[in-house]
Each structure stands twice: as C-alpha cells, then as structure tokens.
Length: 353
Image (cartoon, rainbow, N blue to C red; front, side, top):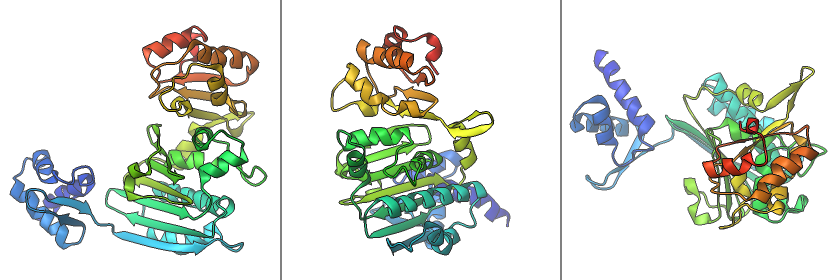
C-alpha cells in the first residue's frame, strides 16, 4: 500500500504533463522527482500496460501520447424534433457525470449552446459530436455540415468578409436570428473553457482563458488535427482540475442597473481589425471596430498584438465616438508605450483599465 501511494503521484505527474512533453517526459519526470530514468520507464511501462498511454517510435525517439478513457462519437440528424437537451441527457451527460460540478456545469452550458446553434443556424443536415476524456483535459467537438458560421454572419449582417465576421463575433451580442437568440451563447461559452476553437471556411477563431484571441487563415495550420472542408466545427477544452465556474464568467461580463443583471461588458481584441500587414491608422478602420459598441455599457479594447495605431484611429474612438456616446464607457488594456502615448492625446489617463 505504501509503495502504491508513493508511486501514484509520479504517475499522475506523467499523465498531467505528457501532452506538453511527449518526447522528453522521462527526463522531465526524473528531474521533477529526483529519481532515475529507469524508475520513470518503470512507471511508463505500467501506464502502457493499463492502456492509459501509448508509445511509438524507437528508443531514442520514442513519443508517448495519452489514450482517452472515454472516446465517444455520434452523428445526429437536424430535424424539427431534434433537441439539444435530449442529446445531452441521453448521451453526453453520462460520460461526464463523475466530474466536479463546476466542470460538469460548464460542459452542459457549452454543449447545449453550441448544439442548439447548429440546429437553428447551420442550415445543415447533420451534427457530429465527439467527446474525449483524458487525465488532464476533456475535449468536446461539435461539427455540422452547414454553410459555415463566418460566411453566414458575413452575409446576414452585410459585413465586408469572413474576417470581419470574426471581429463582430468576438464582441458578443451577435446573432443571425435576433427574434429567437440574444447572441450571447458563443461569447460566454468561449470564455468558460481553457481553449475554445471555431473552425470554418479555412478560418479559425480561438480563445483561451487569458483572453488571448487568434485567427489562422491557412487550414494547414489547424490545430488538433481538424480540417473542416465545409460547415463549422467548434472544439471546447478544459482542465479536469479547473476551479472555474460558469457563474464567475457571467459575473465578469455582467453589470447591474437597479438590481437587474445585464450582459453589458465586453472585451474586444483590437488586432482582429487588422488586415494583412496594414496598420490601424484611419478613421474608417476605427468605425469598423466601433460597430455595435452602443449595445454595451462598458467596452474594454485589448491592444495585445497591435504594434502601432494612428492619430486619426485613436481620435475617432476615444474622442469622437466617446463624445457622441457618453453612456458607453471605453477602456483599454495591454497597449505598448507607443500606443499608450498616442491614446493619451485623445483620452484622459483614467480610461486605461
């Protein structure tokens, strides 16, 4: 018993770190526990025997990967009778019901929101759900064979192109069916998970728990081995030990007026307004970024990955727009010194978050 208790932390360490150290897990673990490489190999062989990990390659170039304890996949027809809560109860929840409540709640919210979006908006005929449980993360993918989320947002909202659709989607409160949807589901879902991806139309929208948003224009760069030729695929991942709760995310972007909660705060990644190698210098670029800001009470502009901005761009946002919309409180974060200096000409220092 004592030997097992001593060995289990080492095995847990291997399982929790194997994804980021597939080729050097032996030396990494040996250093962490001050044990020999032979001892680590013994644990690896035991994990392989219990089908928790798999090894491939020669001795010096061995790669280890995790084997999912749950590997579920099923396809559902999009029909008037299809319902996200029925699929959740009958198939998905039983794969997750032993998770901590905070993680279970996040997956229930994310699954029902994204599955319902595919039912109502994709214009496809099928939805495929794939769930993989690993010791370190749980990965849930929902893919439809519809027209593609970015193309649909572009055409329904008369936007310039699919990249413009990504920018608008990142703000929140965007929907192609305002009569039946608020446009909040994807926004909140993307912020509940450690990693959130939307793959569609050779374009990738990703968000991680540190508000780092990215787009990838080349489908050869798709992470996770996913290549979407048509339709939309949404992938959600969260650590099996995460302490995050859905209530924390709702509270982070909610304001209160007369005791009534409202989704009135958003963070907008400014770099999504950049095309190619262009810089953000013009008033027209600023106006594109400012679209729909009036739907929020507080907008935080995130200047991460933005190298420079022009005087007209800054003036249009923080002087012209702010004067015309005094009820919209504009703030900014992660601006480099050059951008901060440019912004200081148009706004008071108190506008920095």
